[in-house]
Image (cartoon, each protein chain N blue to C red):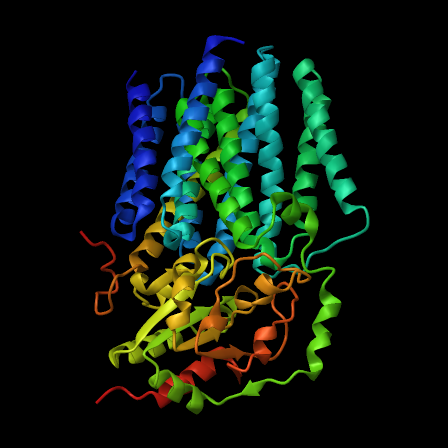
Length: 457
Length: 106
């Protein structure tokens, strides 16, 4: 009874915890609510009369705390990897509990079709999310190539593996005593996780991380069904819903469907096109000139891309923001939903560099204002400002919503070279008469501009 | 299908709808902390892991070992998830001049 009440309060607190994330002003309260709910959930479970083996539980918890604390200290550029890794941990926990539950219930002859079905679901999602997330984390950490790895017949192989696993699952539900089927399901799920992520490239990582998040949440729901535990069902459903919504937002931000992300292997067919633009001309500029343009502007919009974070330029960019703002120039950041490596990543990177969050403007909000902007400074972004997404039906990124920088009076495009972006697509913006190219490393170049803009006396 | 199964499915569907509504309102600004928060929340699976590890009536060496590993995994997510969410949220400040840790406005 006490346990059930504790679970009920915990469920309410979990919902409030996410509700308070709606605005930065209340968000930290959300964390406190989450921690309180978790404490209630664990406490309520430990007082159950049936629970034993406290020594094992305590040792596992202490080890978990010891591993969790350093994982929370990673640099913010590594947050996507950490997130992928935590999907892996979460789904592994679900899969292992499902496995243990299958063997315990099977030895007692207590496997009903419903429970077996839930276990199959839990183990299938758990193991495939486990290997998939490990692989995604390795790709994000660049320990394995981030380019999509494809081979002929890949989709057929993947679908066959998944279909076989599902078929074995159905057979196991029909006859839960066929233990060998359980092993086949587990192995196929582990394999499928790997196959699922291999063909996915760096540009699709925000979607894939969100999708793995949804899977991890659903495997927790399945665990709730297996254990007849409402708190697990509710918390898992919240996590699953969050992953689903973020996946949809990411897909919309790239104008792609789920099937296209999972089976499309972006960036494969378009490689040849990049060379075509060699004879067009672009104008380049110097940091000094760029500083002058910025100082003469009334409103400036900075479009940051992941290249800015790779170059570790965000602190220099903040200095630029700070100096321009102190001179009364209105400076805003235009944030594309897929500007980072996971949903919302760019906001976190800029917040870390001290940029106030009310200056971080989402794409949909800033696009209508772009016509009044004097200077746009694009730093380390490319595909997310490519006008071909709106004008060229032949472009692979056609239909993707972009930040409409070409509406501004002047564009300064900061870049290492004329290379293409993640998607491997040529950007005609480089050859726009309003565009000035500013070549060099983002960190140094922004530093030089900051140097030119002296502190106001 | 017995009634407790139907009740569980009802709870799942209702909480999925609540989740969708609540999460839709989360500012895109905070999508990264949202993901680490929900990650920590879904690590409530630690409850299931505890039950499997040490449930007296349904017990085997296998379930204690697998359950123990699951407790470790879930606990790692709880600790790192909540800590990193709070660490990120602290960085969101409204105006310059605020103290580095002055993220929460009343």
